[in-house]
Image 1 (cartoon, rainbow, N blue to C red):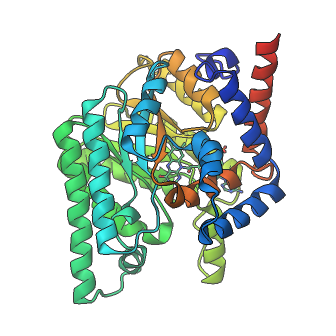
Image 2 (image 1 turned 90 degrees about the vertical axis):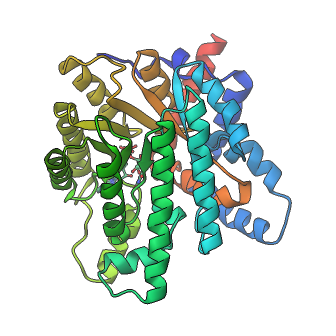
Length: 388
Ligand SMILES: Cc1cc2nc3c(=O)[nH]c(=O)nc-3n(C[C@H](O)[C@H](O)[C@H](O)COP(=O)(O)OP(=O)(O)OC[C@H]3O[C@@H](n4cnc5c(N)ncnc54)[C@H](O)[C@@H]3O)c2cc1C
């Protein structure tokens, strides 16, 4: 086995006893589905009515899952991670912008993260969401093939320009950029924008990465097709593989609007396609650069094994592993310790604006979704190990 995710000493080396206890407190609170539901509602109310809950959020949820409120605060977080060879991907976590001014300011902030990464040796990637720089409804209209008004055409031109500016900066400072995938009903314009940027910049190596959500039953075929297109046009495919984060929403919408559910029938099918996607990318590593974003131990182990099987060095620049800050440190820190390329998304932004992200993390970590019990068991075992 090329790496052992159960080595807790390595997994939690970055956390002193106090930090470990705090993490334990937050994860054990999140384990209760009822508490998360009540907490989410109460926090929303408190924030709306101006009650002073920011301090408590900052010291708990925010501290565990976000790198800071500003880029400079994240630089300190990233320096801590670098001691253990874990890279940071600054992820501006403000969501739901709806105005042109908001899109421009998010675009400027993403460019600042890229500039910062360009000056650092511990920020190997940058990342952004297209809905941060363009209106969701506009993207949905384009996806649906509806005719745009003159005003909407002008708005979309501005989206294209923002994406072009971000990628041009990434090329200038040589920092690869991951374009996140979102809901399937806005995917068409995201495809067009990402493919155009890959064609422009991915000469010899991937600068721009397309995100493949392997929970869609069409995604392995899409991976093969985009690989074919890249080979035909002579550029390297940047492939970020994830399982996909919007399953419930996707299923509900397909039922409401009476179309075929785009999501795999069950978890086993998603797991199978994710792992097949890893095999496909590593088998074509001369033409595909891979970033695998996952907290699934079996998939991370599979990728480590594929690297060995294909005779690649653990730190081959063309293959990277990714997790989210505050989650699955047992995977990230053990992979990094074994010499693999690992980077964690480090979300940051003003506390209030980061709340949707934090609520999603809390919900994902309830006992219902199962993540927290693994994290919690590992933390409890590490606390016991340190005492013994
Ligand atoms: C670094 C990083 C970047 C990410 N970027 C994105 C992104 O750009 N876009 C995005 O959508 N997500 C993104 N994600 C989230 C990701 O898609 C997953 O939601 C999350 O990582 C959980 O999947 P997992 O691979 O960690 O493993 P697991 O916890 O083993 O798998 C859980 C996932 O399996 C799938 N699943 C669960 N039940 C079923 C079922 N009944 N039927 C079919 N499929 C099922 C779902 O996708 C679910 O999220 C990112 C994650 C990471 C770590």
